[in-house]
Image 1 (cartoon, rainbow, N blue to C red):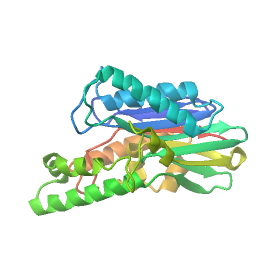
Image 2: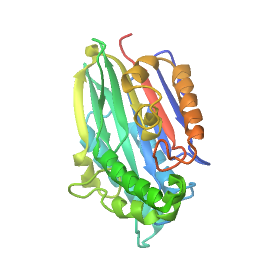
Image 3: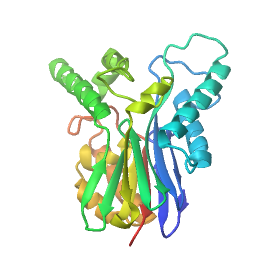
Image 4: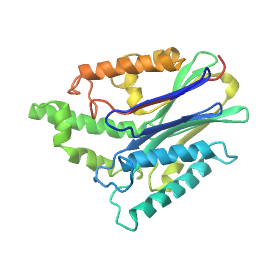
Length: 282
């Protein structure tokens, strides 16, 4: 937990361990969402290789995000380093599926704030003119939407709860996951360092920003899956750590009420949920 008057971070595990990671300071903020490999491979000492990968990224970004280089150069060097460490642990064994993670980050660069997103973690902004908007990469969401739609139809045909259908048909998710970091599909941080060049990056004058929030898709369920409130309302309501925690608790209760995932289709009861927030000009 990081908490000051100007910035804070919150991360909650969706199961026994948390594959999300984050960093927050006066100058930057980021969230990372590790994806469990579907091959069952596990080489690191962490609870999962996805957790190891996300945490390695968090360590690297905390040390390097403020370097005087392009964000693409920083991330490329970081991925080469981290994947190199992973290969050393694996020790020349054949790797079927490398760990991966999404990333949403922002950093102060002179009089501007630079944003970068890859995968389905997002950045939410409240502007100085009280305009609310998001910076996000929807390709990962499109992939998940197709998967959930297919599984929902199978659940209907088989007359079973969605959460049971997902467990019974892992091949549906495996098939679409193979498309990651390939032309025409979705991109995340993983072994293919060139995929980073498909990330989305923008800059905006700092003086025009009131608030920046970065979230993983587990927290985004507040507005895009469980429909507890709109994106605009959520951005406006989160101004302190306690605000973020209160909204997370509402999400948690809503997920419990739909424990078969049929009313609000999703891959599991709850996902890891992470948020960082910087108050810029309030």
